[in-house]
Length: 78
Image 1 (spheres, rainbow, N blue to C red):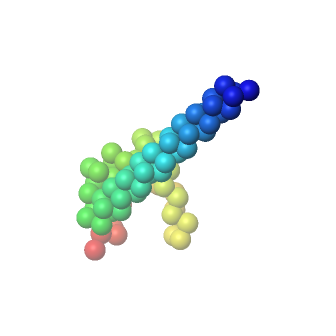
Image 2 (image 1 turned 30 degrees about the vertical axis):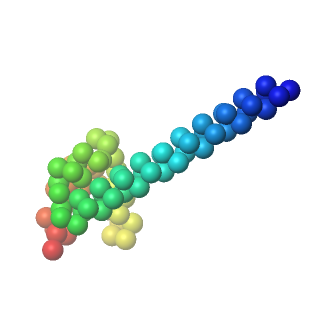
């Protein structure tokens, strides 16, 4: 019985560790995204977006492909 408990604790610890790392990775990606948006860095935005992404901009009723989104940066860049 003691052996089973130890394995469960180990598995739970490993799971929690991977969740914390994933959360940290998400934060880094989100930081990269907003930093790239602020300076309209097309290369960085392109690297962050999947090739088959669909950008849904609900406030203006538009759905864009990756290429459309990158091309539209000139329209909204201030």
